[in-house]
Image 1 (cartoon, helix red, strand yellow):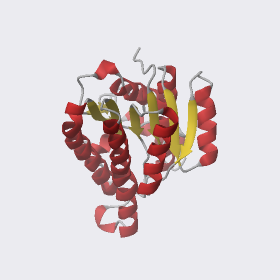
Image 2: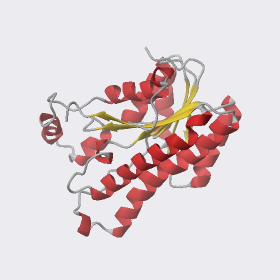
Image 3: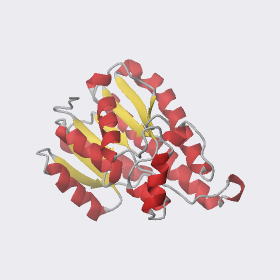
Image 4: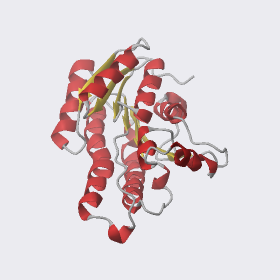
Length: 250
């Protein structure tokens, strides 16, 4: 099993769904884990679940729309833990289902600001810290399968997700010689709060997403978390700048 023994890991957007599952996987692998997000109540509950795995766990507030908030988050981790070894940037936004020409500009800008620029803000300060402490580390970004393909009704999401893939690939080359690997995960439909919102709470519609997949079902958050853990671990030491597809065969 992949190990993060002795590492300090940050999960941005780690209070529910895939982020929480990844934080628990990091804890089970031996890392001290910080979960960050805007919802303090959900964050404290997540930290308690992680602590049940026997790991050092902490919730810290952060808003990926605010550079100062993200900078303060990373600075606090460095002050309290001494370093940052692993980061999973998972904060996102689903947005309304609308054709490209009918998207409200405010909705477009919100998607880009949270999903794409939010990942960049996190990477900016995470990478600065990793370089400052002498290099080495692993960053995993959540792009989603729509960072690789298009999907009707969600052009703003696809555009932001494709942007994350471009950012991931370019930054991976920029920081490779400093021992920092940067990759992305690209899951398809995952049983998560976001997918439930997109399905309007309709369980039958949610299940239908999985019927079109070769394996005949949607993924679980734990399955995505296992892939994130692998990318973050030394087991993936020669993997850099990739978007790992997790779509059950498409």
